[in-house]
Amino acid sequence: MVATFGDIFTAIKNDSENYVYTKVGIDPLYFVSPQAKIIIIGQAPGQKAQDSQLVWHDKSGTRLRQWLGLTDEEFYHSGKIAVLPMDFYFPGKGRSGDLPPRKGFAAKWHPQLMALMPSVELIILVGSYAQRYYLQLKASQTLTQVVYDYAKYQPKYFPIVHPSPLNQRWLKKNPWFEETVIPNLQQVVHQILYN
Image 1 (cartoon, rainbow, N blue to C red):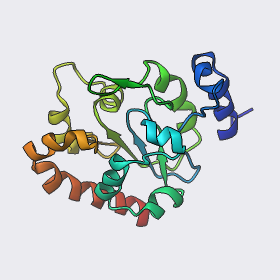
Image 2 (image 1 turned 120 degrees about the vertical axis):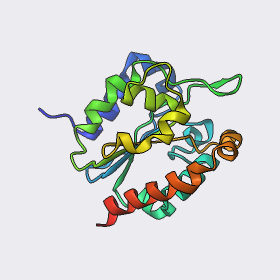
Image 3 (image 1 turned 30 degrees about the vertical axis):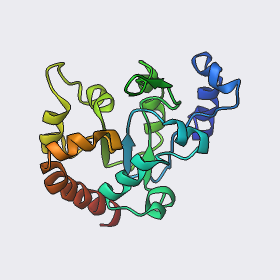
C-alpha cells in the first residue's frame, strides 16, 4: 500500500526522534502538494514560523518571495510550491543564529514526500545545509562559489543564499547575486509555473 501525505505526517509525529516536540503539541512544519512543480529546501523553520505553523512566515520569507517574484497568494495557495526544510522542527537558538538541522532527518523523510510529488521540475536550495546535502559538495566549496556557479546545477537545482536579514553584509559584498542571479531565478520560476 502506498503511503499518503497524511500517513507520512502521522509517522513523522510518532517518530521517537520527534517525541520531544509532539508531546508539547508542536507539529512538523513543511508544505506539500501533489501538484507541486517547485520545491524549496532550506534549513529548518524559525521560531516565528513554528509558532504560527506557516512556512517562511518571517522577514526571510518576505524577501524569499520577492526574490522568487511571487505574491503571498502564489506562494501559499497556488498548490505549485512545496517547502521541505532539512528539518521540520525549530532546532533552537545558537550563538550566531539558529542551530543546524538534525543530521539524517532529510534522508529519512524527504524521499517519501518527494515520491508523492511527481510533477516537480525544480528544487531551490536555500543556504549551505541544503546545498551541501543535495549537491554533495566538497568541504572546500564555499556557498559563494556554489551560488555564483548556479547555472551548472540546473535544470534540477537552483542554489541561492539564505534571504535572512543576517546575510545583508554578504548581499552588499556580492552585488552580482541580486543583479544577475535573482532575475534568472525569477525567469525560471515563472517559466515553470506559468508556461
